[in-house]
Structures are given as C-alpha cells and as structure tokens.
Image (tube, rainbow, N blue to C red; front, side, top):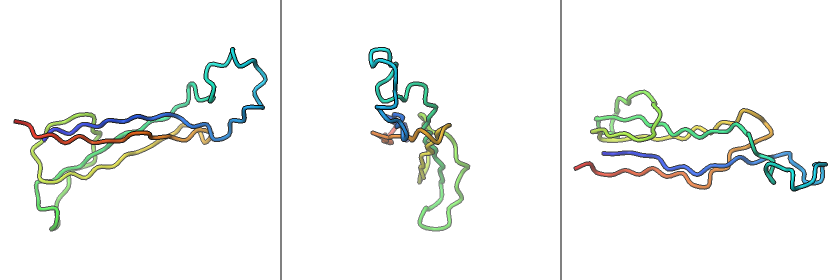
Length: 102
C-alpha cells in the first residue's frame, strides 16, 4: 500500500485586534498578522502485520510524508504544534491517501 498525506494549514492569530495596529494597512505584511507564525502539522503512522482485532504488535510512530509498505493495518495521528500561545493551527484539509501498489 502507498500512503501519503495531504495537508492544507494556516496560522490563526488569537489575540490580534485590527484597531490596535497603528501602521497604515498598505505597509502590513499580512492582514491577519500571521506572517512568520511558527506552526506545523505532522502526520504520523504506525503499522502492524498482525490482526488488528486481536492483540497486534504495532511499530513505533514515524512521520508519514509518503511511504510504500506491506501491512495489514495502519493507525494514524496528526500532531499540531505552535511555537507561540498567540497563534493556533487552522487545518483546512487533512487527508490520507491509501493506494494499492501494483
């Protein structure tokens, strides 16, 4: 199976107030004041060849960008991070594509 992630993400400024900005709007780098926000979304996967309905032994979690594996079951998770409490992570799209490899 080929697994790949597709993510559309943006930063959301939780404390930004339009009226507090003193510079003219034409000089703003970003209207919503999120330019340079350090955010990230990482999709991780772990796999097993065992029956997932039983007591499977799972691999360690590892980052999923794109991979090809022969597995019986997959567990996935997304880890959202922000370097500042002023910014939150806004996920517009988070998809995992699973395709059969010929």
